Length: 222
Image (cartoon, rainbow, N blue to C red; front, side):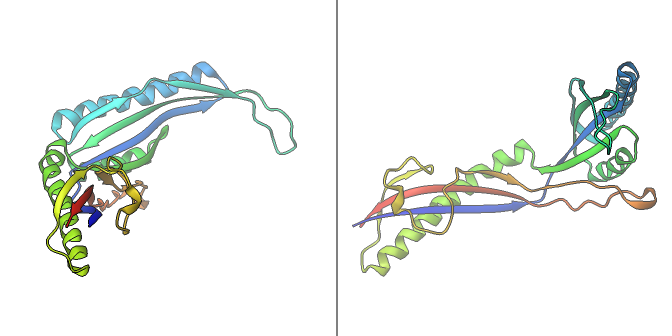
């Protein structure tokens, strides 16, 4: 008798880093003016990011190249209006200090020429590496337990493992026990957008836990 099962295991851990994604830019009908305004906003932000990294509040940041779009809008009567320009840069800032993230996220949301697009919560690479073996071991144990339950229910002896693999590497995957998808093992983080608060108050962020999970497929014989 052959038993084919799927084993899963998940750990929920508190977020350790928050990456803020921003857009710095300007819009208008004079390309040179728009470019200067966007450049000024981005450079001022860059100075702030240098200070944040030097203080340890942020561990990393990136400032993307400026891009310019041009289009001709229409008014409510369908008449073509003068050409418009928009210059913008994509910026990312990874924070270790969530209080600083809250303060600066609110400040940037209220700054002309800046928009806060989202905040993504993650773990550090050190933590991910530390728990990788633990969740994978948990997934194998879950698969073994499933096989033992199925064998016992069928009146068989303790099963012996024939193969354990990442999802999709065993043939006859249709025999996998139901109860989940067939995604590869991985790390899933839930993201939360940052929004401004009235009266100049800082946004009170509630970082989502990070789900660290592993999935294996296994085949046993009894």
